[in-house]
Length: 404
Ligand code: AMP
Ligand code: MG
Image (cartoon, rainbow, N blue to C red; front, side):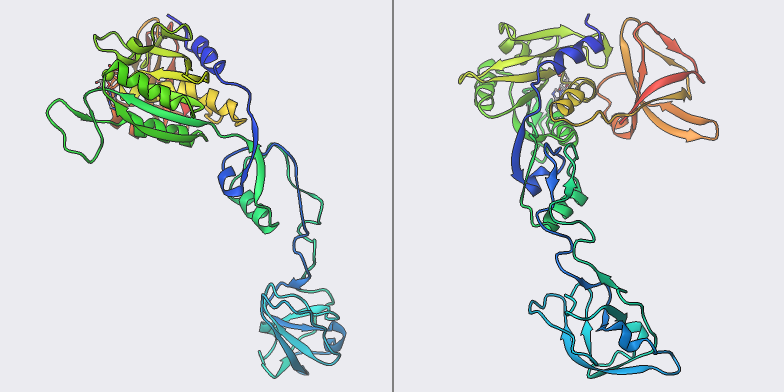
């Protein structure tokens, strides 16, 4: 049997280096920038008011106090969005709103709270230093300065900054198009009626969600029945456009293992046993598409827990690396809250709930080892990693856990 780490290396080697592409900003969410992005314009683009209030010349209200306020006529109203260029006539004030352009020759904004809020004339009860409550052009970023560094993952704040700069496209490492295809004649799409012996197809939605969470552009295709020709036809179509194909089911030791039967003669795809529980039967390689494209394919076992744990161990790290994304599953040590047993010769990934008490990190093993227990998988927030050569671990022992 192949070790988990050896199979991780084999899967990782199926992927090429990350590729840069220019995409609309909205499509870049979650992707990593490949170039430094410079500010195409200053932010703010013009001096504007930081407050709702009155634009004044600070020198004209320097004597204003509560006891002896200063009253000025209000010559203009400047709401945000006013586009003409105004200048402040000496001896007047302009009523101005937050974000509205400062009139030329005004050098401060008196907040409305320090006035009577007048419309035709305004009584100001306090002096204010010159420059107060003005957001200067370029005070956030000057035109031509670096706005976003190369190697930044585009999240909501970066989308905001790019939009504020008026930038519509960005060069990022390409997000891979992952196609998830489940196999099994027993499978039925959720929402349809079930006959005896049928089950709802859950691996497809689950693995698609996992690939999306990992940062890929994932597509879930309707499952195929355990029919070799139908499966091959489907793969031929998919290999024309997908960057990665993930299948589930049909790779173990049964009589109707459609994935294995369809691909076992290919020189480019291997089926192996990996020394792990869950997830022992694995396959991977390149699918030779009819148009000559060789698409990385990873064939996961069908049991739901096996398929997701296999995705976590083999596909997620490789997929993220191929998109320039960092490893993001923290590995830490925690004390086991119960005795556990583990199959000798296999690395076991038990479902666990990681928590902390006053002595530090504790992990509760949950659910039986059998790999159909989706309920416990859905409760877990960690995988407890029991090494191959260990067959029992007692309560209180410190073990390695992978945070999900
Ligand atoms: P297989 O690897 O095809 O032999 O399937 C192993 C077990 O996983 C069987 O109990 C299948 O019914 C189940 N299984 C396979 N594919 C799926 C799927 N897409 N969704 C839910 N269960 C599945
Ligand atoms: Mg099957």
